Image (cartoon, rainbow, N blue to C red):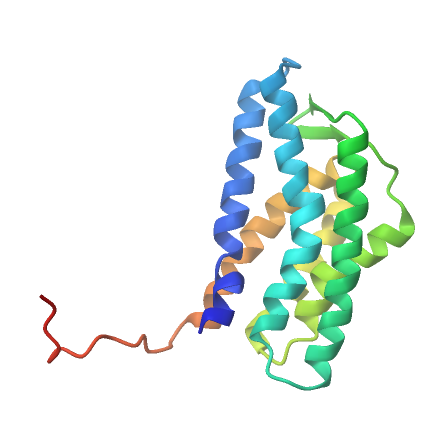
Length: 191
């Protein structure tokens, strides 16, 4: 049961991330210290948290076996990717601007093909390997939204894909829907 908490927290964490970006939107176009801080916090979610957190959360759901072992390999790739992006965020200034109806993040690193491959493998591949059908559905929709974002919103990828992923995280509910929740025994009276 405790192993399910990280997966169950995914929609809440996406909600916090979207609140940060919403506050950033209200702060822009000013390049204030608050705007810079909000941009860094947002990118810590998008580039550091998600590639490490998602595969670990899915790994905790998975019963033992080869899928779980492969998920751990993908989690290691996600952690390495998160550390790569964290180092880039710490070493270089970050800037966010409003571009049309989107937020454009001036990222401190090029989109390194190896880092991107590891990111997608970790964040999308681990849930795709799950033995749980609803977790695989989350992965499939996540991959579909990534493709749409890459084709239609590439300049604003960091903002738009995270928005789609936040919406997609609603499918996490399906993993828990229909389960009976353990209830305290009515015969036990608390003081």
